[in-house]
Length: 70
Image (cartoon, rainbow, N blue to C red; front, side, top):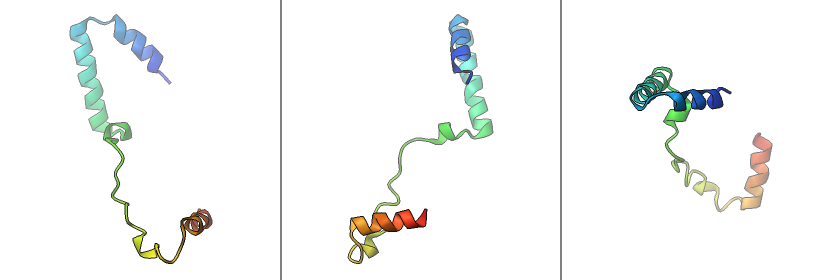
């Protein structure tokens, strides 16, 4: 979207003003709870969630079931 324009303008600023710009960006991220700021890595909290059906279905059968659920 505006990334290139922002980048070009940012490069034209003196270093002390660049720090202010970064602080303002952090403020906006916290104010609007940007999803990108929250993304800190992939969680594996779902791991083992299907352990109880491990003996009932093979991985291929489970793939077919997941296609049905979509």
